[in-house]
Amino acid sequence: MITFDECAEMLDEIADSMPYELYRDLNGGISLLPQSKVHPQAVNNDLFILGEYIRNSLGNAIVFYYGSISRVYGRLSREEYYNMLVGILHHEVRHHNEYLAGCDDLGIYDKERITEYLKSKGVN
Image (cartoon, rainbow, N blue to C red; front, side, top):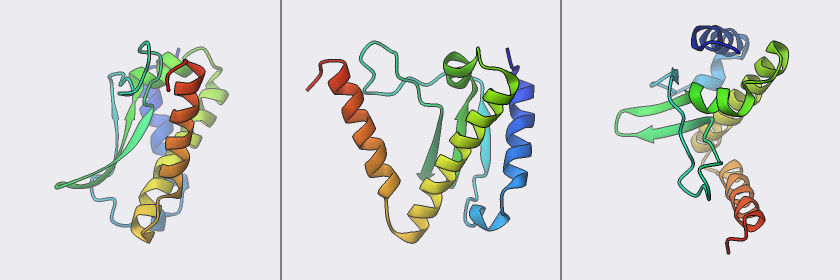
């Protein structure tokens, strides 16, 4: 199992490998919190938020939830876990850059995925 500190080191490495320009106006930075976060539309507490792009009065930030990531990907190899973190960071950075560009294509995609999840659970 990847520890919290190992996950943080991986995230730092991944974030540092990406072009700095992608983080323009991300004044709240990128953080890793220890807890899990269940999606508000989860049917049986089985849908976890791994990371999220947050915009509020304090600014723009990306937050990762170590507990959620470990719950979903904790059995993966170190390399597979790392690759999942890459995907999560790319996803959240895309949300940030789409916001700056005035569009929300990824937000629409995310909503479609939630709709598919709810249908698979028999919820209309």
